[in-house]
Amino acid sequence: MTDMLTTKQVQEILHVDRTTIYRFVESGQLPAVRVGKQWRFAQADLDHLLGKSSERALPKRLTVPALPMSSTPLPTSLRAQPPTTLAALLPLTCAQMIQDAFAEALGVMMVITDMQGQPVTQVSNPCGLYRAVIQDPDGVTHCVRTWQQLAGAPTLQPKFSASELGLLCARGLIRAGNELNGMVFIGGIAPTPWPPSAQEINTLAAGLNVAPAFIETHVNEVYRLDRTAQERALEFVQRIADIYSHILEDRQTLTGRLQAIASLTAL
Image (cartoon, rainbow, N blue to C red):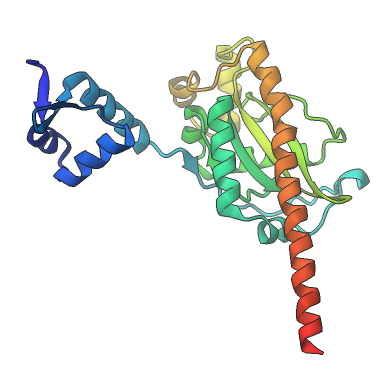
């Protein structure tokens, strides 16, 4: 057991107290072996924990500021309630957790927007290229513009299309009753072929007002899904949107009942 560490040694490496070490053991995050009355920890398990910690240090979500609403009218079949309705009705903490889980499971970026393409949740599981581009206001504009354009797409069924970054994205529709309230977007997926040619990178860089070298640095920080994984993600995006649709309908029903009770109480 020459590579086994004591609790005190682990404390010194992680800079935490003994109680925190025991919590790691109880939760299964750090395997341990009892030797007599003391715990011993394998160096490899500690290295694995440290690797996980460094991954967690990179935010799994990004907040996208809202932009002015698009002046382009939506097709009649896609007109919805005012965009504030979705944020007001959707339990955002719960919605974000559901979105985070599906984004990680499918290996894609994901965000919920209203029907004007304005983000309602934070972006889950953002790819490196998106992280880099979103640091600039022009990059934010390009990303939100993609969502706004897809909001006006005439098709009701999810299908992949190219974003302004050249990556594949698709959307599922959130509806309550007969009204469309918002969209679930997946994206960050590299098309085939990828990466783009030098000329395409130059064009993309010019559109984002950045140097081509900046794009080249991050161009491979995207999600690469084979055809089966892409089809699975495309199938799930509407199913995920349907989950939010049911949540909206249930909350609307509950709100209606509470209002009815309040009216009876006031009599």
